[in-house]
Length: 346
Image (cartoon, rainbow, N blue to C red; front, side, top):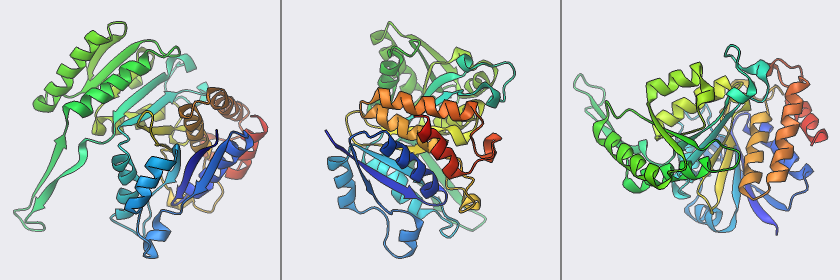
């Protein structure tokens, strides 16, 4: 069955890296119908706006997945278009799971002393639609000596339970070690922490075959650096997940190798590299496409094509092993050349 995938290259280096990821998907000859959309800063500045209400519906009803590049442009200082497009997709499609694997694909790239690939292999489940990023708050008497700002963190029983349940289910996969660590700051954030703690304990009894543990977020950050081998599946809220996932990417070789999946199981989901739009690199041909290519691999797995996803993973590992990389990883190749290398070794 041919499945439809929306491609949104976005801003900055997004089009450059997504072009290589799309070429990888085409080289695999999988039955995908790829449709390109130009949502991003250029369209916004032309007066075209962001994603229309009907287009959100179209994505939800008619597309299996979205391959996304990056958003962010210095010509739009408040990044209003980025919030409307990326955060809009996450909320309107209810993509409540942000899944970020932290896998060390080449031991030479790990900044930690004496850590092997087997030591850095965990995944973080970040709640993607609630928390401090829900947009609750405001400003009173802005610009005066009496200015007051409030940011409120929103957590619902439904939202907390479904992200925790997703983490427990993932820990049961054959390639995982049946360990879930819930991360919060319940010693300081008592009300929200109580909801997370109670729900986690209840689900831990349901998933009694999975080892359930807890860390405060500061201790979890130290664990990622000191002993990442003790982590398997980590689950946490939106803000803490945003921070810890980048730390996980750093110990696994850097943001240039970091893919992510924004998921709602059984529905249209979004896949993207996490490195951002990097406007200073645009047009220089040095943007690292491997994060985008690995995101395409996550997309394939989501679509039920694990063999093809494994081929992508193996080709990326080959590129790293042969130093067929861009300068950020110590190589001498350009964006297009790295993409060509990966496709030759699929």
